[in-house]
Length: 135
Image 1 (cartoon, one colour):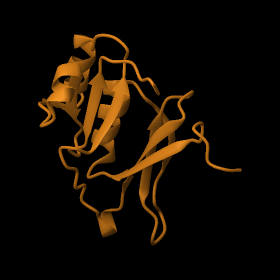
Image 2 (cartoon, rainbow, N blue to C red):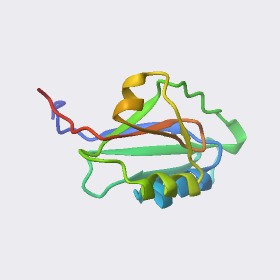
Image 3 (cartoon, rainbow, N blue to C red):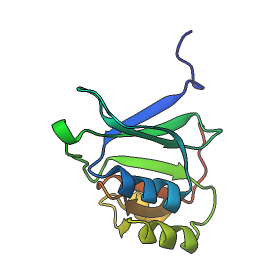
């Protein structure tokens, strides 16, 4: 099978604390836990996959206490969710209550068209008021 615009995408990232990441992405944003695994043998790592049941993407968050990889996000490492409408204040509040931190973007476009929230590992989620369009 070849790559198409409907191919599933996995975004994999290291995490310092999978429980904190789960609070943010699941309790805060509302994604579901798709898979969880505990690394029990040498060379394995703890794993948390979160996403929507009907989404063509998911986040894979990994942690290996024996060989920790520190997250190294920059201000431009963004996961943008297009809401096609206002960003609910309740959603931003819930993200902050679940370990997120609202921040300004160095790119004024995202400040004008959305809200940026850092997750507990420092990666940025942008809730964009615009709709996605391929045209």
